[in-house]
Length: 480
Image (tube, rainbow, N blue to C red; front, side, top):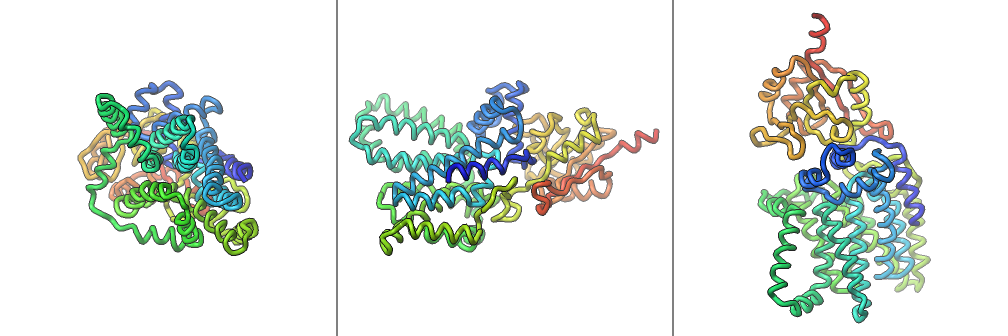
């Protein structure tokens, strides 16, 4: 199962298709560090985000070169390890056949394949979460052994790694702390307070800074939203055939500390996704999708044991039915697994790669031409030419970009003012409800010249995310 899952995932990155914006942004910064354009410390500290993802990409670039394939390979590896982690956790709480059924789902679920073939950290967090659960269970079993410190060290290392991949990874630390709370309390009572309290303060400050806890806290002061309809649509209407058995399966886990740990680690994620997040991105729910196959495998393994005294027959039958139905799973390797299979427009997977290639073909001197855009996430990988100005929907006066030395402006008046500074220039437009204000787009379409348009990626022609390039001043120059 693990080998077949690896083959499916490797096939999904085989064409080096275009990054979408989030992939391009972190990969672009890693590329700049690798090329020596930005120092290692400046890159990490300027970003303050997905720090371990940057380190992972640097390692992959060192081994395989600077390509989309190399940037996505760590996701493939983490996704493949996740199949093994799913099997181990499910087997611990049920039996061998329950583990195989869960591993089957983990290997072939569309949502897992889509996320395992992107240059993003969420699959790594999903996998590290599974191994945190498995490791805590091992510690519980070997509680009287003198070597449990090895397991504690490995779990904490993995949990910190997950948190440095993305703030979402803090769920691994939460699960570990909840599961080990009685042991940690007994341990703390043996440490002199003169050492204990300063250590707690130092660790807390480090966590606060590197995990951007201030940003997380600020989320809870936003007005509450209500995305429960979308949550219900996803978990009940689309995945109900997995969700309901999985819920019963997780409730059948006899380890009380595990049940509490799972609840307390997932509850903040669910609360933030339903009530605080304006963007309903499924990738933030991937830890939940790590547990759905686990609970599903536990449930049907227990059903087989209780009703038929034969888990193998039940689990194999379920696998055959799911595979034959083909719903939410992938039955043969593909060069692309759409992240929009569950929610339309979850990812704006425009063909930035072809778009920038065509820009350079049409304008070989592009690097010396002023241009505007609505963000530099996509450009950070595909060009080293920093935009002259960024126009984005923000409710503040103009501000400088967090990482690049470019000002960001909020409305058409600033666009007209910036345009006057340059006798000629280019504008990149994402022709959908993107971050660029609509009045600026309307002005561009009516008054500037359309130079080129790219509709979609070749690997996904049915998903239309048009990119356009407009110009001003070039025709006037030619007539003089």
